[in-house]
Length: 440
Image (cartoon, rainbow, N blue to C red; front, side, top):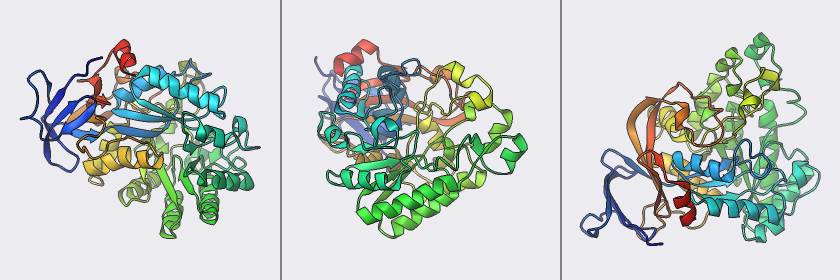
């Protein structure tokens, strides 16, 4: 299929410089391309828009295979493109679990066929996420999917010896274990953050130490082994302190915070609205402020969505029976702008690092452009930072609608997403499925 040439005029790069970005044959030709653009180039007025490298989500639940009533690789890929993402890492808690080479290759093939984003499967650490014996880590690493991130997300690798063996294994090929830090004994039947509010509301508390103790153990194991460790959805002030201490010791640990943990607090649970039920739970305002500070000082390396779609009946129920999780791909960038940029804690260069460059590096994502260099794959996002609007359900492109932001005023809006030079999102409208698939 013939490739279209695009000229994005008047864009602002993350560092603040103006640019006319010329894209041809799926690659960036120049950031000063106005004079070199051919007459038939499609011209896009990007004045007032910030050009970011294509966003990368290290923590997405695409649900397929097995839970297609919640999401599929195709619908999740469309949600990602709508949110400005060009690459997503798909978590392993599918059915069957992504614990073999065959399943991870299937997930990657589904992503390739959809064509909206690059889909990189995450392999399970243990067979069936059961925490009893290691999965086919080596086979997944050597498969066509070339898996480099392994996680039992949704459950914790709680056995210390098994965690040590996993770290030793992935060290041999520069992989990383992404830990869901949750001591299962300390969180049995837990429903929300443990504290005065949980007592007031009569809900079983989820103590901060259940997260912090696992992180403390695992950073010491990573130091002992000399392997890479990544902490998923860090949520407490104490966890930030532990990661900061570990980094000061030179331990190879990275950490992520979710958009919702950077903005929302446990006070929302007073409504008993299960849209706010998430794992780990929403915490105190003090924790939110500590996470923001941790992002600003580099203790927290990335922002990752933990996009967790569920069917309506799983959330429209009494609190105890409702599923944990929120969708987050379409709202991530507006929440980050609202929580971090508008507050002066971060600038757009920081956003590019938090949502693109660093998650790509942690996941060992090859061929990802994050400096707009000549010849790089044209993965980029154009966002309107001046847009301040109420987030509504019609902005969701996936199957599920369990967003906590319906009716919330947020800053910033993604206007264009380019994946390998193809506009998957065009001035707010997703490209047709058949066009994306043809470019997949």
